[in-house]
Image (cartoon, rainbow, N blue to C red; front, side):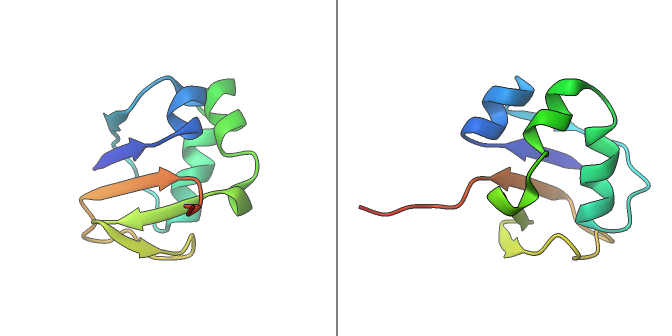
Length: 81
């Protein structure tokens, strides 16, 4: 699946996107897998309460299942002004 990173998440990981092979069943499982890869991923996902996730461009939750999902995007909460 395609995994996209935005804003400071992209800055910490150092990639805007990547293709990930995973056995994760939920977004939380995917975060656990990614965090175990390298310190830069662990730093990006250290506080998931500061993150939002979208599955196939639909805002979702970290306990959402990944079955059939083609794209996961991680980004900080939006602020308006």
